[in-house]
View 1 (cartoon, one colour):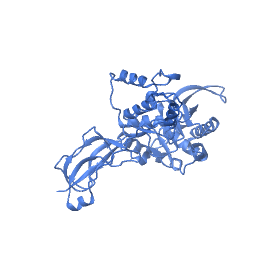
View 2 (cartoon, rainbow, N blue to C red):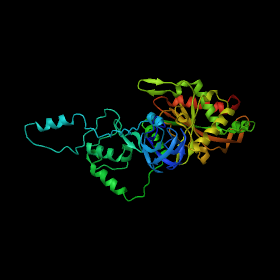
View 3 (cartoon, rainbow, N blue to C red):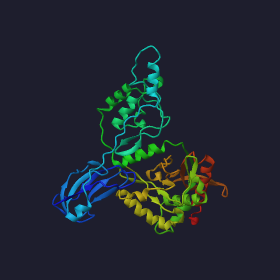
Length: 419
């Protein structure tokens, strides 16, 4: 019987590869069309690979814990002549390998120097010339496209850049190397010495979610980020919570307050792209959730138009999906801001980093009883206080604007009936 290939599908816009978590069938098993037969893990979620048509499993070439790029043939299904005609075997297109680009002007410079009448020749393989940024070069880390260099990132010779491309290294990986070259530049010898020094250390491949978080945070850090913070009294929130069913947590109160504040000040979360400030059509807020070895940020759409009761129900569903790694890319995409409740870890204060495609993130610390001076009573009274921070892209927002936004969030939290 003819065979139809089972290929690694494109499970998300940014997905380049996925790791096999489990295989649910074996050769000889009968399968139906669109039956989930393989579970794969990306940096965002655990998803399923399904059969292209009904038939019998002829062969499974994939292995559990193996990582395969999009389009790779994972196995074959024995199918009818009609189904086979619809699914012609196609060899997956091999990704074009990026090679280290020569620095513009290098050949001309060599020609000029060799043509000065002296007739001398010189070695240029490891000459440390300034890297001219002509765009964003990309390498591969865990199969996901990540920038390997950034404009103004420093001076690296062509040999070093070629070695980095070969080993899938980024500039961040070289941050711990003390350069011995001119003006402290890293030489190829420095790089090889560093690589030799870590060869004997314990090492393992990070999980897909850890790799995804690392890449997102590295990209976020290319922006000028700033943080402002202030204390907030949580007693009104805690009192209001007693009368609600289901009972929202403090982070959901904060999310709702941020959404309403941004609805009043929509320009605060505009993204600066090129020469334009890009706004959003809706107030979509993410909420950071710890999931295994990393963080996932499901997004609640139209949070300013969603009641606290609805937020509580929706949040419970998203947290369950996040911890089971079942969030789809649509559930985490977009968003103009996020909320991180680091108070659940007993932390007073923190400076969470906003996602690369978001302008800000609101952080909430642990609530603690503290003596606060009450002017009306002329005495100290016990109140539950927490530290709240707002980390933001300083290109889009200044300290004054961030302070006013944070003040409005606190005003709403102190009068939760408005939420």
